[in-house]
Amino acid sequence: MHSSHPSLLIQKLVTTIERHGPITFRDFMEAALYDPEYGYYMTAGPRIGKEGDYFTSPDVHPIFGTLIGRQLAQVAEAVAPGGEFMVVEQGAGKGLLARHLLDACKRDAPQLLARTRYIIVERSPEMAQLQRGQLRSFLEDGIRITWHADLAVLPQNSLVGAFISNELVDAFPVHRVVRRPLGLREIFVGWSPPDGEVEGRFIEIEAPPCERRLENHLSRLGISLEIGQRAEVNFQALDWITHVARILKRGIVLTIDYGHTASDLYAPMRRDGTLMCYTGHRACESPYENVGRQDLTAHVNFTDLALAGREAGLEVTGFTNQLHFLMGLGIEAAFGSAAAQECDAMRNLIRPDGMGTTYKVLVQHKGLPAPVLDGLRSRPFYHDALYAGVPGGGKGEREWEAVSR
Ligand SMILES: C[S@@+](CC[C@H](N)C(=O)[O-])C[C@H]1O[C@@H](n2cnc3c(N)ncnc32)[C@H](O)[C@@H]1O
Image 1 (cartoon, protein in one colour):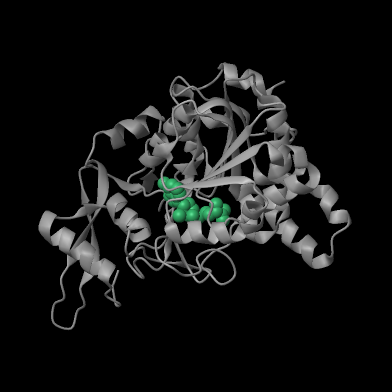
Image 2: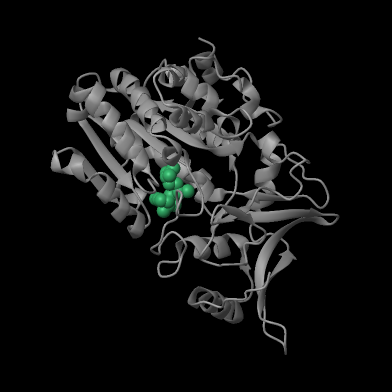
């Protein structure tokens, strides 16, 4: 936990801690990633891809975006046949997913492209600039693409189309908790000042949770952590899906990310939780190293998104993994004509021992009957696993009728 390279961000955090006391891990992560001056995503530098710290699917091979484009074309027929089709992409990173899916649309469905409005919601000005570069040719062709920094600008019931994200929710800051014999404790971050030869460093402090909501949330999911087990809770994900549901009038929400159902995410085998730190394609030990210069991320709780979405009016269309999703959309056919190197890259997207199963795909819909989607063609094998263990569960709920068509 040594902070061997003091930076302005560290100084800022230390000042806050010295003035107000230890901060929640959530607030620490928020600052490390999104401090407007020094946060990891808010400053210049390669983040995603070969030159950066980690790969995402759009970086692995353009077929990912091509197939999502194919899926959206099918959604457009169900949601807005002949009319304006809106796509909102939040957290678009380098803009590759947008570019690849719009490329596919231009090639395979030019009429759809002409009636598409693409809206990017991107918090990071640095990322938004990269996205503008990637999408320049579409802008020059008059394709309607606009940018916003915050979801809050999109009016309620304004979206007729699709809301998509890839690896957005895992980048939201999380609370961290640990179960002790006397109950649930939250992990706060304090500062131990330099002492002689010993450098100043961030330290973890366990204390009763800052909000009762943490304990309530886990028990609502039927989760009881083992003594010593650590876990993360992503409240921003709940607020986010509720917000998305309000914006959507008619259409789908497509969320792709690494994660699990609640019962898997909080299983005793994940004793240390799922928080990860990445720099230069290496997983790092500690979130307190390289503060503001490494990525911090935690696996997504898809049960949360399904339950909070349901409360806000979104029904689950299907839940599957990236392997089944891309197979349903026809990735197999692309191997036939591709060179060996291309095949290797495409294979990485669907590896059963890698991205194919780590990444999950949740589709929710609102304002229309459950759409029939090729990505969910092989009937989502996760089935009612989303609600497993949740008191009162989701069993017999209407949305599961939708997936057993
Ligand atoms: C892990 S990157 C994923 C980028 C891209 N979707 C991809 O797959 O390569 C997360 C992205 O979400 C953005 N982001 C994080 N929180 C956000 C928020 N609340 N609103 C909009 N963008 C956000 C980050 O700036 C970054 O561009």
